Amino acid sequence: QADEAFVTLATNDSYAKGAMVLGQSLRNHNTTRKLVALVGPHVAEPCRDALQSIFDEVRLVDIMDSGDTAHLTLMKRPDLGVTLTKLHCWTLTHYSKCVFMDADTMVLSNVDELFEREELSAAPDPGWPDCFNSGVFVFRPSNETHEKLLEFCNETGSFDGGDQGVLNSFFNTWATADISKHLPFIYNLSTVSIYSYLPAFKQYGHDAKVVHFLGKVKPWNLAYDAQRGEVKGHSSSPDVYQLHPDYLLMWWQLYSKEVLPLLQRAYGDTPF
Amino acid sequence: QADEAFVTLATNDSYAKGAMVLGQSLRNHNTTRKLVALVGPHVAEPCRDALQSIFDEVRLVDIMDSGDTAHLTLMKRPDLGVTLTKLHCWTLTHYSKCVFMDADTMVLSNVDELFEREELSAAPDPGWPDCFNSGVFVFRPSNETHEKLLEFCNETGSFDGGDQGVLNSFFNTWATADISKHLPFIYNLSTVSIYSYLPAFKQYGHDAKVVHFLGKVKPWNLAYDAQRGEVKGHSSSPDVYQLHPDYLLMWWQLYSKEVLPLLQRAYGDTPF
Ligand SMILES: O=c1ccn([C@@H]2O[C@H](COP(=O)(O)OP(=O)(O)O)[C@@H](O)[C@H]2O)c(=O)[nH]1
Ligand SMILES: O=c1ccn([C@@H]2O[C@H](COP(=O)(O)OP(=O)(O)O)[C@@H](O)[C@H]2O)c(=O)[nH]1
Ligand SMILES: [Mn+2]
Ligand SMILES: [Mn+2]
Image 1 (cartoon, rainbow over the protein chains, first blue to last red):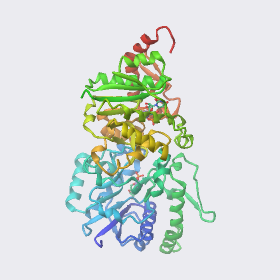
Image 2 (cartoon, chains in turn green, orange; image 1 turned 90 degrees about the vertical axis):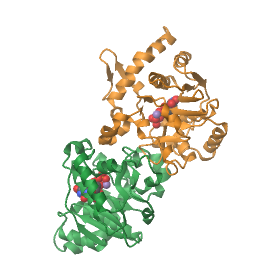
Image 3 (tube, protein in one colour; image 1 turned 45 degrees about the horizontal axis):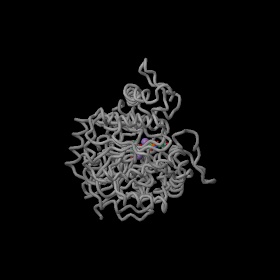
Image 4 (cartoon, protein in one colour; image 1 turned 180 degrees about the horizontal axis):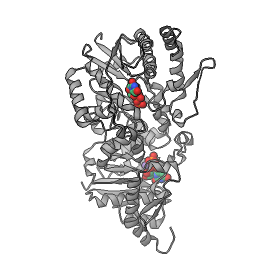
């Protein structure tokens, strides 16, 4: 178990906040595994210090970007080319098995049982459910796999311009080969699914283990009124409705109680 | 193969039009299996006659309705209680195996290979992908299963007020037990998924075998200009955007060329 880790990624200070909330949520639920944050060179020094106090390992990685605006525009997410940076996680070969989690996820309970699964295990994507969502997946670090993935990127590219397209083309038997590699959806509950099939959320949602703030608007894009305990800007944009208010509040409570103090200590008098 | 059948359901004349398009699409792609339409008592006589000329068997069934407006309202679909009528399909015991298809589906190629699958095989629902969508599923008619299903309805009810909730609770190991019971998503391609993850549709959509006009607005709710070959009312409601224009056009072309003449013959001078 000492050679198993949860891994996340942040290429900028905003996603770094998300990573801190994720890391802290894993700690709060007493994970026995190591925590690793991959960070890009644009993450500020004090921000890395704050990450350092939650994660066992904060590792600097190069930015990889698909630059594939054509495909990314199809998703209205021109920013996601950079998610190819995620592929660096396969180089963490001092671990035998890892669980990657997006910086916009948060655990609601201990999820160490995920390490019983094999590469590549992931939950279905609600947009196209024969694809897995690459926000939470179990993998085995391997330089060989890493090189094959890079080669694949160069030769085939990504059908969506981001990591999810590449990973689904590379691990292309996920939908058909082995049911044990299908993580239950409650390990990667996209907040969008709450509204797309509300009765199912009411039936199964109370067992949610990982919430994923998938989509354009992230919790850190909103404001929080700590006095009133309310998330604000909550009806400004229709996209925001996609974020479930209860989970959103949990994210902000965790951030303001346990993450903000770390950032304040790291930044001192410098505004951030 | 003579004891295998495609089965659909129509409780009113509108859904009956959909059933006719589905049946005709199966014929056009040379299915070797029988075609069965279950119809409710409100389907008009001439409409049944038209169904009769496409389907091998048109069978009258009682309406079952959950009357569960509370759950149905969660989905904004108060009309779907009646879909419990679908459960009658298990009483077709003169067939050994069947494929149920919603009246708002249409096949794009021969799909007889579905009969190689076992009960209960179905494709994931894009709203909550650990549920199967009950618009296309493989089943084995059995009075015993039918009775158990009715009992289950009475005791447990349906978490969504419709057939999909009951069937998912009854066949509750679909998500975890056997990958061969996961039909590829292209056998039940909801038109909503085209827009929720457009790059995946561009990557995988050309292999689509069954299109499903899932949602509130159905093809028959729109108008068609046969002269111009255009579906109209196409930008009036945001819901309509969910219907992919190419598939919508295919539906209307099939309807106006091959189904409308049957209806005109059956209705004679009576308007319909
Ligand atoms: O500018 C970015 C965009 C993404 N990411 C990382 O890539 C993941 C995937 O991106 P995102 O979560 O925004 O995609 P979505 O889940 O909304 O499709 C994020 O969670 C981060 O870990 C990042 O570090 N910087
Ligand atoms: O008033 C109705 C509603 C539904 N149905 C049948 O039940 C199926 C499921 O309903 P629908 O397709 O409207 O649900 P959706 O796929 O949009 O969830 C239909 O395709 C029809 O076969 C019917 O006969 N009459
Ligand atoms: Mn994400
Ligand atoms: Mn339907």
